[in-house]
Image 1 (cartoon, one colour):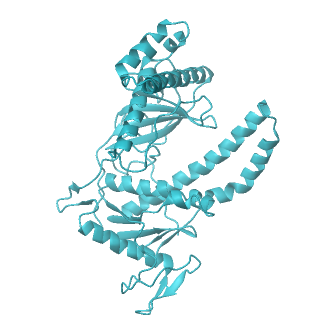
Image 2 (cartoon, one colour; image 1 turned 45 degrees about the horizontal axis):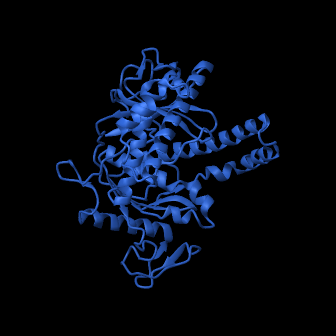
Image 3 (cartoon, helix red, strand yellow; image 1 turned 90 degrees about the horizontal axis):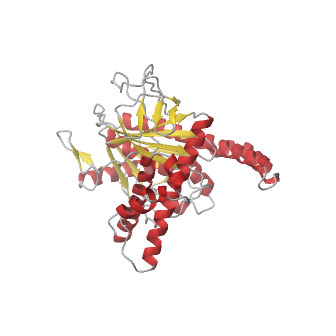
Length: 424
């Protein structure tokens, strides 16, 4: 399986200029190739192949005065930009043909230098890890990197990104073997919410940290200062970066907390079952800010890929399942209840239920039923994974290797760290 590891990079002034050129050249190649394909489609001409675009927009363009500066960056950057465009078109075609699961994917769009995220992608021909802890990038130089953990294997590709507040990150894709954890008998159903971030079927509650709500006071002050600055001025640019940095801190804290909580749940349980919530729909209600602050989608995605990595069972319970209406003791369906009803008594057996705990228990029972019916991924008696979907490289991977495991050499002086804490 593939995992993605992100590390903070600190390029110097000349390296920042070189990276800015690389971002710009990759963006120009993307836009030129996209324009050619759109014009061919509008004119009723055949789909322009990648080989033709590579010849016209990279090889021949370097020999013209208008695009001669494309030669200032590595050719790998330009070729990878074209391959990324091919991938975007493939995802779009697969989506409209029904071959791609999930939400519909739109056609590729033009990129702008004002986008919140600038990136380039490199293969092993254009970068290498050096013994002194730096990363050499072709036509950029040796980048200083802060290594928070060792890479478990040699990376197969590298993505360099610059976010809205000017930070640089190196994202390595690594092919690794699954890290199977010792089996345990515990299983857990999870009910996600807002008052408590998650309630487990064993009664434990994970309190919601509400990172955005806690940072709102400072964000309001920074945004007021930004609104007072004249458009186009340097003071406004500095104020914008301050706002972006505060939002980045909130996102980083939330992501780190999600990783710690999801890792702890996966290690403690052999099977994890979660209700498939309609987050996009809830994000359009009056609870939108709290829903987005909770980050349920990112948390469930972490549970899913970590379960596949560690040999655990993971299943999603359909959102139409009435987890809050059914008595988990006797199975009687007691009807829908408004959100302000947090406790209720079953009319059939008289059991007093906590709304969230009862829902988590029902999610556990329904998840077990789905697994027994073969409608969810699980493991057979020999421990081999059955019906397990391929796991893509996760962009936000932040898991550290477990204690006692060997790690990749080549980045000297690093110690593995492991700290996972479940609140509540």
